[in-house]
Length: 101
Image 1 (cartoon, rainbow, N blue to C red):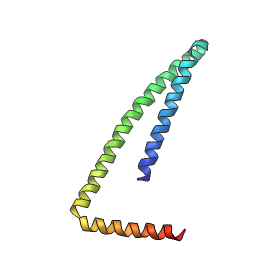
Image 2: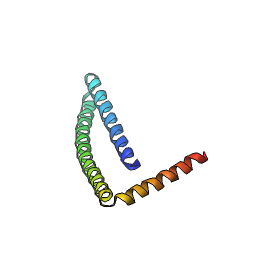
Image 3: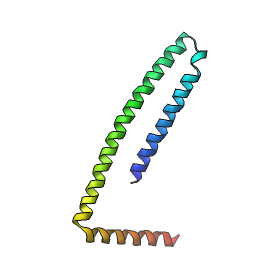
Image 4: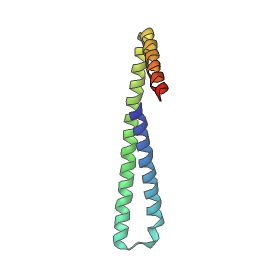
C-alpha cells in the first residue's frame, strides 16, 4: 500500500512540475530571442511527450492496482476465516507496537 501512495505522490508531483513548466514557457514567450524560441518549442514538445507518457503509465498502474485488489478480494472470499485471523493478529501486533511507545 505504501508503494501505491508513493507512486501516486510521484505522479502528482510530476504533474505539478509539468504545469509549472508550461506556465513558465507561456509567460516567457514574448521576451525571447530566436535561440530561446527554439528551446521553448523543444521544451513544449517534451512536456507534451511527458504528459502522454504519464497518462499511459497511470493507466497501466491503475490496471495493475485494480488487478491486485481483485486478487485480494478473491482470496478473502475463498478463505474468510483465515483472512479474519490474519487481520486480528495484525491488529494485535500493531496494538502491541503502539502501546510500547
